[in-house]
Length: 308
Image (cartoon, rainbow, N blue to C red; front, side):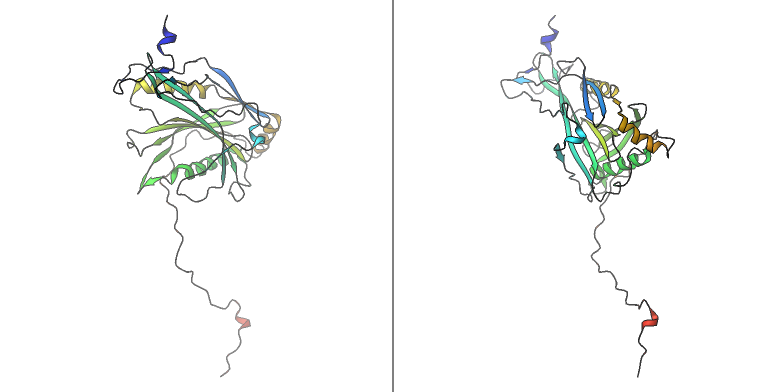
């Protein structure tokens, strides 16, 4: 009878040592259809409304969401630019975040926010000078190489000495988004916090959307203790339900681009398994030694004869 009140998103300051035996969220849990317009293609997924956690004592949490609405994500431009802050070389990828949302999970009886799931979607585009500039990302092997390059630059160079901060991709699988376009689903393990046996995790969905663009969707679960089932289980349930609902309605122009690649590549499926990338990567240091100058004449016939 009072279940709606038991997990009402309002926080009252309590003993920080209190450990709830149950958390629940988001408050408006009914899945609702979301749509992103990507050129002539539409991407759909089901997700509940997100809601803030209210408080009079400063312990509440706001939702700073970014939503594309009905805008054509590929054509609009001006989305928030994301910059690579790793120690690697220049990556030649342009990254724009066009969607972000957070769902809070609260403890009962005004116990406040205990966990959260943040989702962020990025449009990735090739820049001038990229080795993928003249490639077509609809080709499955090209897309896989592009993913490797992108995540190498984003995560592969982060290290402590010879130890990487991340592992990935982990648990790679193919995500059938439509009858033509497939996506990749995998995890990134952050192991700098507690090692390989106690990582924190980000779940990733990625798929090509044009010959020069692909989408990366992050589900940030790095704040949750994976060993704590009470906290982890409801977050993964929400995360996986959103991913399971994802699908594409491919437009004619996009399908034509995909068909053009298929004409030369009969098997357009992504690989069923993908090994971990060899992280950490170490940026090559420039050679400070001057190059030896070759003074050997290139044309013996043009040499002047020696006259004593």
